[in-house]
Image (cartoon, rainbow, N blue to C red; front, top):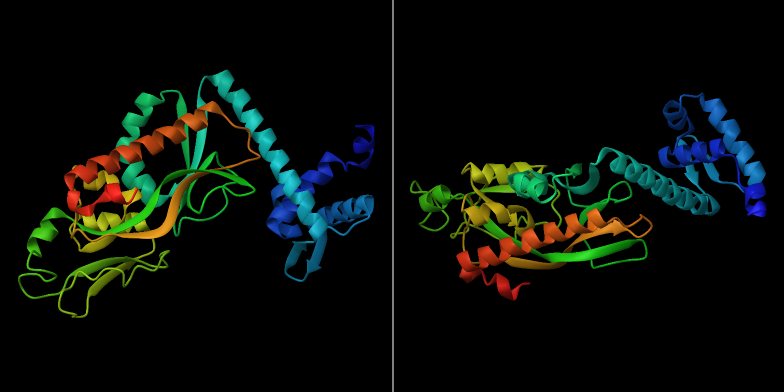
Length: 315
């Protein structure tokens, strides 16, 4: 321990290093720390002298980490995260409110989580649920949250992953829209279906399903946020492709309906993910298990409502 204390840089140097590495720029780190860029530069030079190792590659547009710098940054990020979690738990115990943060898409939050918030609060009256919203494709780190919904193959070196369901896609629309297009892909006036598309979708689903039956060009609307795609379908604006983990609530209530019995399982798997280095909290596990149970209940209900989809064969 004494050897460690002699080799350990000052806490001020570690805080400054973490900010500079995360920002990739001494000026941005200086703004965050309320000091001058020159002060950050001097502090990092002293840190490198202390360790006798270059931590940064200095470039005109900023800085990037060397291999030793990456090793130190990863260790500091894990340590700071652990300290932050400990402080949060202390505050939770003092206030009697437990905070759980989740990283999910805007679509999942709007169309699955919000309709059942009353049910969630009934199950977890002392939990303050906080959302880190992902606007585009469901990706990115889960460093700053307790749980993240991600499509991945399973656990890896850094993450625990609990399987939720396979990624299942199916074309959906409002009941009124389906009724008006009952002739098969066209309105009574002969106009082709309108598709509601998500830009930069993963996977690219523009050609997965074609609601038009005669090969005519399909009219489309394109949005960058999947929450808007689903909302447009709810309003009867056209046919959208439904990620089942997002639209399960609306299929269950029949505010949205399948266009046909056609669906696609992509091969990707939906998981709820957490960092292995993050201290495990019982309440996080309970929230995770509640979400999975609710989604499975949705799937079982939809399977009975629309047996032609054969959802039981997909799980």
